[in-house]
Length: 111
Length: 113
Image (cartoon, rainbow over all chains, first blue to last red; front, side, top):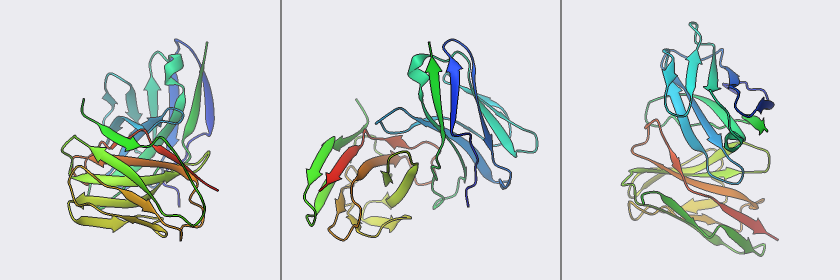
């Protein structure tokens, strides 16, 4: 069973904020929310992760709802180079728990 | 530059032949992973290794084999027993098995005809 649900595709205008949603209604208390992205024909790249507090780094912001059942990845000023597939993953940080990459959201940033 | 290298980027083989994909990292990471990606799909875990001389099957290990004789290297052999070997293969590493960030190589696109 998929642990996360993401829209298959989204568009965003260059320079605008891209808000990528993720539902994870069955998340457990010890599971983190991770975001990776994969530019076409390249290996995935880690973006950000969080447990329950909102997180921000140089790439993006992660907003997690209070009940932790959903989250949003925000790219504040999307550029054409942000066009990629974005994967939302939930995982507990215990040895043996692997990252499970589902279908992701294909974000197209348009000029 | 620290990172993960995979070679070659494109590989072509005839059906029935075994083929070995290379993965090398100079990040001093203990854990390494192999994933397979089919067109339009997410990644699926083939094998992973927590430490030298140790490796475990992932979700789709049938038809594949690995070795971990050195910390830096984690080669993947696609055997003739793998029914549908044509795919994009990605290698990754992390500081330890449960580390939050995995670093991925550029991938090898294998085509078997």
